[in-house]
Length: 474
Length: 95
Image (tube, rainbow over all chains, first blue to last red):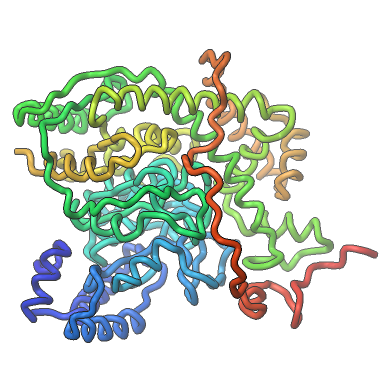
């Protein structure tokens, strides 16, 4: 439906009386059914969404509706929503029902957004292709032979295929930006600690962020503004005031931008992506922005740093899944120890077990300093160098991914080849800074290409304004 | 770093995981590959660099110490694989 290409349009249509929330929900439910083979949704809250839509229609009539009234949102299967199942796409959480609601989700509901269902992803958000899910793989709607990216593959496809207007994902090393690029939608990873992580099933706690998929910048900004900010249930979340991002979308000045030489020169970079990037760089210069080349000598070190630290944190976070208080318990248990081992052995997939094993290894007494402490030191070097570049330049731009969407099975035999998919996205994750991926064209096969924009911590307003300007460049 | 069978079994026990012979060999191969890859960090001189141990800039954010209703009993037990009216049930620990 043409009317539902943006929230602004949706609101206009509601105001004019041409459509109501029930009609909007029915439109998406119909699309979800027609495109069920994409496997983006794990569960659709059909009845509930319709009931809520009717209620919100009444609130709109009464003039008491919240600022997201009429926005239909899907949430990744790692976010808790009271009374609803959440599985982190893992057998070990099969049948688990949340006892409380994630702060981010609650804030959307409080502003009258309609949650339409939960979305497929890689197990415990570990993966770059959404092939590693207990719920099965998700298909990229641009080409059904290809992956949507991961880990938030279902969330990206839901927006791409018009199954909801906006979706929530999570981004630990690129899990929002990479699938956004593969599916041709906008995907934001905010600054670490900008949004409360309460109710988010943890993967790597010093990296995890909740991110937003949308069809355009304005919708993304509005949703961030609703979710971000202090929360008494997360002591790490930033206490900084939240700007009204959605009212700050105009770029006020000519900017100083840098692109990273190593990302453009990488032999792994698909030539069409390089061309698309160069076209944007030229267009930025023509529009009066200053664009320079810089070097970032740590590009080859960001992924190893990321993998040591995230596997370590994952091995600690995932120790809670022991078959005692919730989730899957093996039937083959002779004693307490075998209950732990068999429940975890049968409940986690191979990739999750691999990361727990690597994480336990790098944290073990004999190797702690050589691997874990070393990676923490390199993290500081990467963060400081990135901040140093951002003290001279307003933004760093780089490709979101080295290639466009790849085929199913292309990287499944080789874990390191799969990890390299995140080559360009982990720098922002390691540094804790915000980054957005926006669509900037297609390759010869018609597959979407994404460009990434990074800025200093808490500069989301600047990122949005610049991203909007880049999107409008001719 | 070449991972051997002994190390895999030790790490698997610490992780409370179990592998069959085939799974064990696969884990030996992929962990060796991953550790060789991350050892690239050894090329960097990090002498005198402080490890970065936290990413949040907030320090000791505490909420007021007020009594609020905790998770109710039945909700807490709701997802248990095995339970009785008051407790989570696990296999016998003491003989």
